[in-house]
Length: 406
Image (cartoon, rainbow, N blue to C red):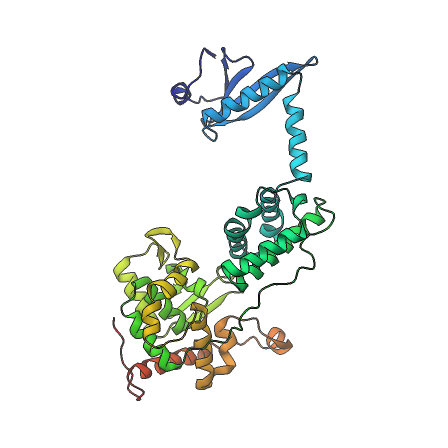
């Protein structure tokens, strides 16, 4: 089969058959199209050089645009006209990219071959976010061999000023991992990040909200966006990680318990969280009002994704920041609510099960090897006791327990 010219309309008119077939493009020497049974159209350039006939795949439509495919054909045809074998040239470029990659290329290889193989999906997602937001915009186009120690130090020091010490230190750790990998696979002889000390001093994480502050915060949340109100309350009531609360899914809620598989939480272990009455009320009202497919907190109405950590920061420090300040509450983060819940339960006499509620790794040979009791009754009592204490604080400090309804 032959066609005399090639344009977008003609490409769209080409239909697959029961078997793969070829179409020769007459006005483009050596170019023919391979039409697959799935409808993909592979552009193939057939040429002869030094007595050898070779076929070179240029890419497929619609994965690539017609303009991109025409450009690939023109480049390969020009190489042949100049006595250059385009397949040999492509292989040399590929080898060069492997031995002398840009930071962007090296990062992609690191993520695929190291991070994806050894770390959890959530960690991989965070690493990719750091690359995309902080590292690649600055040095992504530079060759790995061009990156000096001084360049990295200057970049990380600037990050301290722009993004704070915590994120600067996390990015430095990621860069150290990247360049260690580069040494291991033979891209570099030594790591330019080796020996660089974290430039930022991180503030100790010891912020705990008092019951009086929690009472004031709950009053502020009464006027907050519903997602913000419900997420912050559930972090406070359950003591769970902000990221795990905002990613809560309907299928995880089973009666009075919230169950996370090993792949659905940071610790990598199955985890069960008791839901006391107020927590159950929040979840049930969302189910009744919003009819979620799975995620209880969807991202901007996208039912395939959930509210992200950046949303929590925006709600706390931009949308609610002034009201929180006016209420007399000092600066805190979403994670501080988890710490406040843990501390509150310990004060109430439930310190023995705090690690179980937080899903921290058990310590000591007795807990790790011999003691396999799940402590669910004790966990249940602790979370009910904590919720009751919050309701008593809202009632004014007396023993009367109030029902909270926004």
